[in-house]
Amino acid sequence: MSEDRSSFLKASWVNVASNVIKIVVEGVLGVTFGSLALMADAAHSVADLLASAVVLVWGRFVYDDPDASHPHGHDRFEPLSALFVGGVLVLLGLKLLYDSGHALLDGPSAEYSSILVAGLLVALVVRYACYWYTVAVNREVGSPSLRALAADSKNDIYTTLAVFVGVAGMAFGYPIFDPLAGGAVSILVIYQGIDVSRENIRYLSDGAPPAEERERIEDAIRSHPQVHGLHDFVAYYSGHVIEVEFHAEVDGDLSLAEAHDIETELRELVREIEPVSDVHVHLDPAGLGEWKDAAERSSASTAPR
Image (tube, rainbow, N blue to C red; front, side):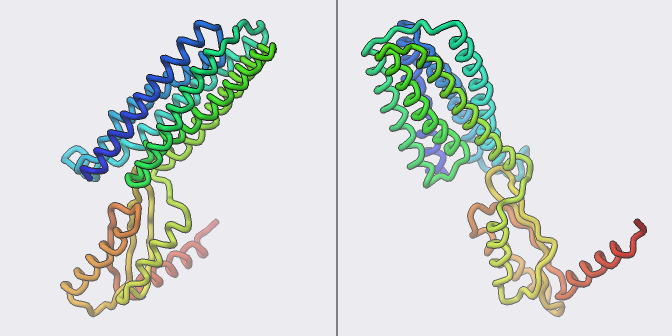
């Protein structure tokens, strides 16, 4: 856990530093030469910097041990920080789209310079290196926050390439390409923000994991030689990890000690499955689950409509 925390913090700091570099380079050049596309991309990076800082502060709490105030751990802090990233991206994208529309109506006023190309190359290299490093770290850490930051870095690569189109248009005497590139950047930003937000809302709202994930967990439970049936199975996200609850049916004549051992084995068996965290097991005598389900179906079918 301490190694994961250290890797998480390093990757977060790399994202912060790369955004600062990109903001300075694109912001100065955008203001100097009047490029809306560069200023839009620099503003995008300001939001990225804020998001990276939030991930750095909030995301690290997930590596803290459970305590009296958070007995189930701190897993929800991470998708909360990632959701913040997504929300910021959506709001910023809408603002950039608005500004680009105004520039198209009023007429562009940007000036071309080869320095713009050099600045964009610096921004592109910095953000690609950040993306590559964040993805590499997250293969080991498995963090939704780092995944959101990696997606943001990848998004930055696309937006910078779009800005290149605007600068190229200016170079060939078509300054209208600058606000067009700014509009394209804003649409990409909005899409990425919605995608990140949708994923992490599921993590925060106790959403169910994919069907194949649930089936994998159920198959593991049924593989235990003492389990004759399974009912009342529930799996849901608690942050980016999965909590599992279920009733397993076993022989009714087992001793208390034997039942306890089976319960422990089942809990450990399920917790070996990534990304399962907490497991709550209840043992029932074999056949009780089927009887209960049958009774409920019978009651439902005879109930007045």
